Amino acid sequence: MPEAPGSAPRSPERVDASVLVPVLDEEEYIHEALAAMRAQELDGTLEFLFLDGGSKDRTREILEEAAAEDGRFRVIDNPGRRTPNALNVGLRSARGDYIVRMDAHTLYPGDYVAHGVERVRRGDVAWAAGAAAPYGPGRRSRQVALALESKVGTGGSLFRHVWEHEIDIPSGFAGVMHRETLERHGGWDEDWPINQDAELSARIRKGGGRIVCLPEMTAGYIPRNSFRSLARQYLRYGHYRAKTSARHPETVRRSHLLPPALVLTLVVALVAPRALRTPARAALALYVLALAAEGARIARRNCPQDALALPAVFATMHVAWGLGMLHGAARFGVPADALRRIS
Image (cartoon, rainbow, N blue to C red; front, top):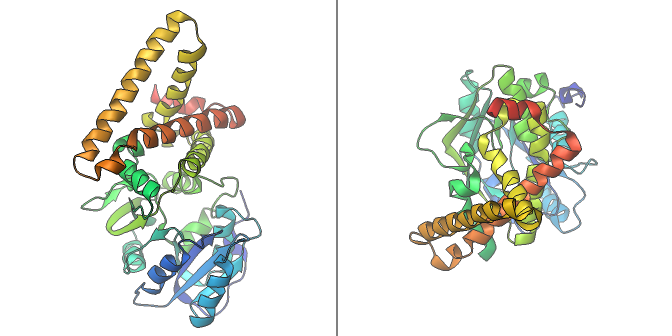
């Protein structure tokens, strides 16, 4: 784990809240993200730190133009290139008492920061976040967004669903924390390029901190817009979920084990002796029927043309996650304590 990020000196020009935004080749959505950030309202002072991991498109140019027009914006190099490195660079450079994490491919309501700061300021929670409401501007991202509105696509992850009231959650999506909380826990662990929020959440909860999801902080998350990018994303999710499970076995849900079980069933159905192949193929047939039924249910209240693709979207997410988790277990070790807890 890196040295406590708060050890670097801060500028004497204090602000109330610092927003950290890791960026890497975000040209497609950066204009919308900038507009959402300019719209943030807070009874206090704000700064926005864009932490660039070496973008090859026009992201850096667009951000520097925005910084020249708005003194609240700063563009900072992230030589480590990965998200946790960016967040720690931002934490060291931030001047705010409250630290806000935002993503460049997510659209936030104008009072997002204000609600988060107000909730954390009350003192009984360590982290205030909102739901990630999927919003798909492209054809494939619309289909993925539909999948993410279903428990078949989210596996019961609480922050993936919009709630009518505040709830306690095991892991936050973006959100607001007090600077002291992050410094006390050593910031984000840079050994977690993916799943770093879940890893940080586990440390905060072990330390007695609460994490809450507020309906007022619901943000529009833009999913991947191709099967290839979706599969790559979920491979990495599964890979680092295995690592998080080994370090923090209490974070594992039974639903985390279903995708690797699916992959193993696929292998058995293809190469095992007949006595094992037959029940495995029967299980796969039931799985396909379940995906089709869920797709039909969603089609009744959404665009049928998009819903037709849902079985393929679900299968891509599940198989990629499962392969990633099995590979992660081979690399980082089988999360035996987590398996024992669940069993």
